[in-house]
Amino acid sequence: MLAWLKHYRRELLAGDIGAGIIVAMMLIPQGMAYAMVAGLPPVTGLYASILPPIAYALFGSSMVQSVGPMAITSLMIGTALAPLAPSGSALSVLLAGQMALIAGAMLFLSGLLRLGFVASLLSQPVMSGFTTGAALLIASGQIEALLGGGLASIHRPSAVIGLSSLLALWLAKRYLVRGLAALGMAGRLADTLSRLAPVAVLVVATATVAAFGLAPAGVKVVGEIPAGMPAIALAVSAEHWRPLLFPSLLIAFMIFLSSQAAAQSLAHRRGERIITNHELLGLGAANVAAALSGGFAVTGSISRSAVNFSAGANTPLASVISAGLIVLALSVPTTWLSLLPLPALAATIILAVLGMIDFTTLKDAWRYDRSDAGALLATTAGVLLLGIEQGVILGVVLSLATVIWRASRPHIAVIGRIPGSEHFRNIERHQVETLPEVLIVRVDADLFFGNVDAVVNHLNQLLKVRAANGLPTRHVVLVMSAVSLVDTTGLYALGEINRSLGKDQIKLHLAEVKGPVMDRLLRSDLVNRQLSGRVFLSTADAFRCLDDEHSPTT
Image 1 (cartoon, helix red, strand yellow):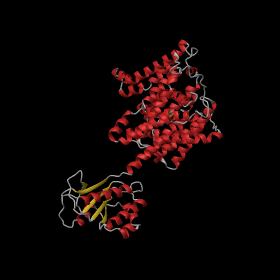
Image 2 (cartoon, rainbow, N blue to C red):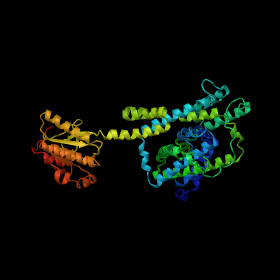
Image 3 (cartoon, rainbow, N blue to C red):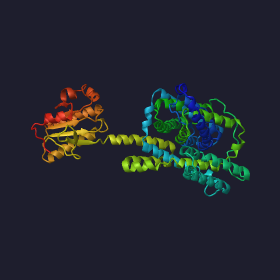
């Protein structure tokens, strides 16, 4: 906070105030709705929108990140609490705060230890698959609230309110921006106002319930909302630490990934830089603040942050203003919120989360890399069939498995010289010059325990093919321009290749070995004593030195 406050200018204030007002109007219905997803009293969503954004402003590096309740983390909280406490009970609130405390402490500690690199543990396709699966779970879980009962026991007034709200929200999302633009409104303002459509729909739905007395007729409403600020206190349940620990750690992981995606996207548009470890500190502080103020786990919201940015936010002061307005809303009589119908809230949740379903990434991955597309679909299926926690674990496993699978199958190319140059390219892609008794092979991956067998087998296969075609081999040159690491297993594999080739009177040469790799190889016997050939500075040097006849064959 000290960094941006130090350079704050008066001309930034108008944008921060405007964005703060608009985001507060979004946060009130969103916070209450996502508290329902978490199985908590709706007011806890408002509590989670007050201190957390202020705490994030102290440490976070994003200027426009909007921190508060979010759909996916709310679903994870609800899933973890379901077997431990009745929905909406005082115990569920206590345990939700305890989860926020655990998640916040882990995030803050990770920031202190500079563990921001964990953001790379989920690939974009896997993250997309997880988000899609979670969105479908959340949407399906709101059907009963939308219709006022199960499919076999629909409550008609509730269904009318819920489905009408859903239709109105869909129409606003699809056509409102276009309509406002047609009326001459600026595109940025039209987009911002269209995002406030849920507020207008909920106001109309609440007025309808009040005007026609639908609450006594069976339409479920939010009910009494306690006025005033939450008590600042830390309450924990000692016997629940163990069952809450693992889901809290998964929630912390998802908080960071979701928030990082929002922060990076908007920072790129603003020409700013996100400091990953500061984000961990900010998110950790925000969740500890949520635990102290009767809230639940919070994160940066992609959609809300985008609205904050579009509305003109310049600094985190916009989020502080939003928090202040929510305090103001809780300081006045809250009777107007008590008649807010749950079917309308369910409609806002359904439409919001269905927008998270990502068909674009699936289509792109299917065209570009089928393994990524398969990981996306498998993660979605895992979330739907196994559950949210298992879906996170499956996503991490699939991301790491994909990396290992690709690394274990490195690209290996036989290369030759482009005529009249010192450039060497794949003989299958270019017209090149080769030497009749020399095999030049480029390995396009690090040499480590996971892929050395594939490299050795591929090299042996190349030699067999050459022998079968009547091409004697006297020299093998391994071009290591793409090799940044040779681990101990890789070193032993190079030694084995050297010995195996030596038995057939073939010399092994290395070319274009990177400095750090060479430093390590020089500490081994391979380069100092065992290598049958030479280490060349460049492939071109190797080509010239091994050209015994000085007459390359095309």
